[in-house]
Length: 159
Image 1: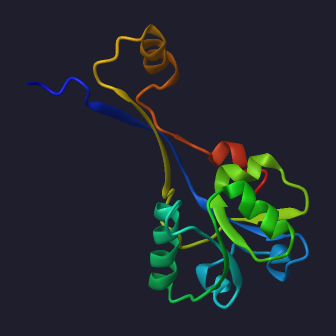
Image 2 (image 1 turned 90 degrees about the vertical axis):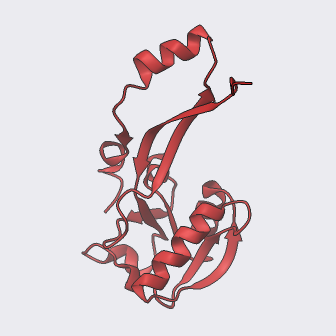
Image 3 (image 1 turned 180 degrees about the vertical axis):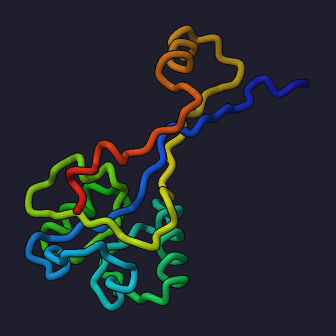
């Protein structure tokens, strides 16, 4: 029997991870791009190893390769929660660049050098046998074969 319910996917967005810091944090006013080693020994809000496994493993492996050892002070699942904890002064966080477009009060965002290029990926997924006209139009008009990045959206929001 053929697999008529096969899922099909298309990457639609790639973005970088950036640092979210409270405005009063000493690194918020550095006149240069941050490095992963700048985060060595810093209090960092981390992604949950269960509900946000991809981000958790991405950060652990990236810090390990860089030789940086931040202090993980809290684990959370959602970026919005991270931003609230950062604003409260609990620690700093690495978040998808699109988080800067939320313009949360009391936070600054800084790009980080030596980070794997655009490790955050958003994919559209649908059933391969779908004949939904809305899906067909979405695929034709909204999701062209080109992959998007958030570079244009966050250029002004990230230092």
